[in-house]
Length: 409
Image 1: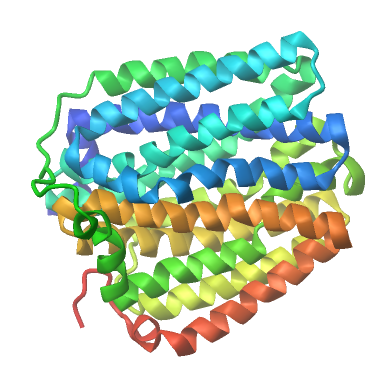
Image 2 (image 1 turned 135 degrees about the horizontal axis):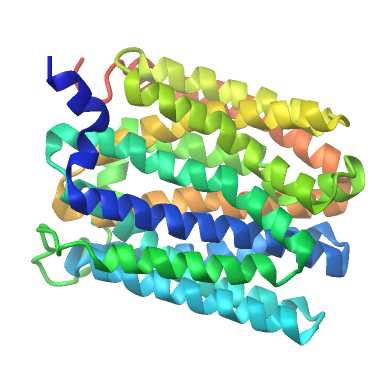
């Protein structure tokens, strides 16, 4: 009978994972405060939705440009050290945003340059942090670690934007200052972790070694289908970049309301995380994936058409809840099916897919909004997500028929 609680809370039996979880919570909380503040600040300065798209683009470019490097680095060098260096880099970027705000400058190109630095740090921290978690817990607690790891991100995504919006309402530099202090605490927690054992990349860094992550993903069609489905679904259906437009011009709810809108998807996602921690997906995983991607698209359409703040919040919560199912299935597949020696490179590939769906999706939304208007950009994107779910169900029948996440028939 003792095995049941272990399966739910087992990851926290390990001090290193607890510190890692707290470090990720603090770092993600900081990033979310910065994200909502930067979006409002840039749109307040330029009133151009295209600039909101550029915010996403400059953070995605490093992940794409460095994908052949970041994963190999995570497999060759100590992952905890890589995370620490990246968090320190993010802290330096936050200090740069404080300096920009206090200077009174209106040149948003400076902000884009700082966010490019953010993107470089995130390009390296993604593969390292994703591959580090399995080194901190035994295999029997990995499922618990994945669920609670997602919860750290979702908690930060719920509270961080609200805090960022409230603090920005007090003073534009306030959310950046709070984020700098919090990310420093996260760095202290991370450095308190004992150096874990890790299967190091032993072979020389030749071309075959560098592209091993791509080769693995291409070979495992279920993994390829899952991450590419998420890529195109969020690339088309993502509306996060346009939330400042909705908060300021459509719903007229101000920076605090923007924080609420940014938090709404994570509220829905956290509810799913809590459910999955106690009731993980045990059967019909592939079918559930397609169902919830379709719901994500429908929720996007509802949000795009809504002119009522409460209905917009509900639609965003539905989007977050349904997207979390996709995240859970994809991350579980990657962590359970990937050998540790290549896990960093596979996570680098995964981070490019995630970055393309999120940051590049924000750029897509910004360009579309500049050309056709924000409402059309969101609604057409949601319809595209529903179409992608139908197409992928036919292209990847093995994913549609997959029943168990651990590869069992």
